[in-house]
Amino acid sequence: EQITDEAKENAKIEKYQSDVVEGVFLDRNGEALTEAVGKGEAARIVYPEALSAVIGYNSKRMGVNGLRRTLYKYIFDGGKDGIGASVTLTLDSNVQNRVYKLLDGHVGSISIINASTGEIIALASRGDPEVGYNANKIDDYYDEAGKKYYSDIYGAIDEFWFNRATLAQDPPGSCAKMITAVSLVENDKAD
Image (cartoon, rainbow, N blue to C red):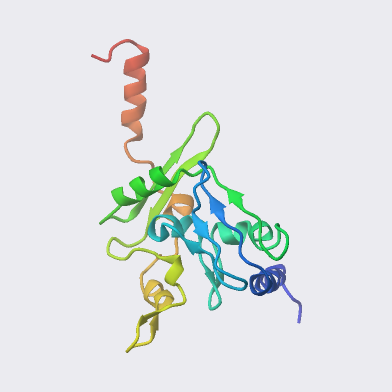
């Protein structure tokens, strides 16, 4: 039986997870987006609902996803003395929190990108209007009586794990309005 590349990567991640204090993510202003907990423990996301879809979960039960998976070599192995490296993102936590709140009660995503540099300032996604995704609780029991895991609750919602901000192929909203507005301004017709 051949071992796939993905299985090899998963084995590396599991080894790192148990031996290292997970490194932290910082926003563009140096504000901590995650807080290290301890060796073998998932770092806590400071703004879990607004940032869980971007940073992803680190679960003993379900593995690693999001930026945690993409950048695992840094946050689990890039530091020294058993502590993963810190990673600074171009996100602005204040803008991220604001746009996530705008999605309250809706399914969709909001992306704010600096067109000059390509920096991602905010990348909010919501898969269910009633349930907020909290990666900090992914392995916690949802209901002590029923022993339902949060991941089971999330799994019952169609496309809950689907990050609409990075994967959806929906047309951008009000794109024609922006083009019209720019044309009016450039042609000195904006009164």
